[in-house]
Image (cartoon, rainbow, N blue to C red; front, side, top):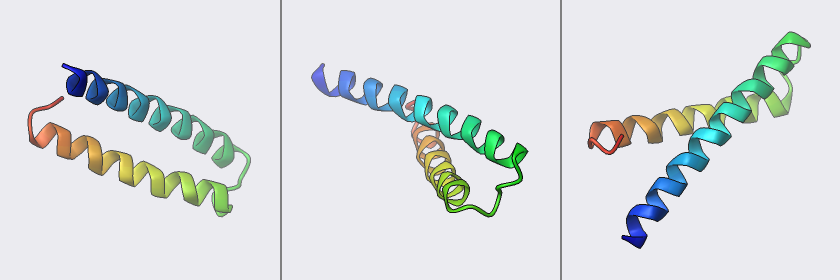
Length: 62
């Protein structure tokens, strides 16, 4: 049961972080800072989060 709880917590944290970074990217984009290092880091993170969530869907975990 502990393993399932850990997975659920990780999934929740991953989704929260992805939502937070998406909002930050929108603010940076509105300020014309799409080429900043921060924006690009968030973009890279977003691709990683998408890949992880897609893999979870592929295995029927979400």
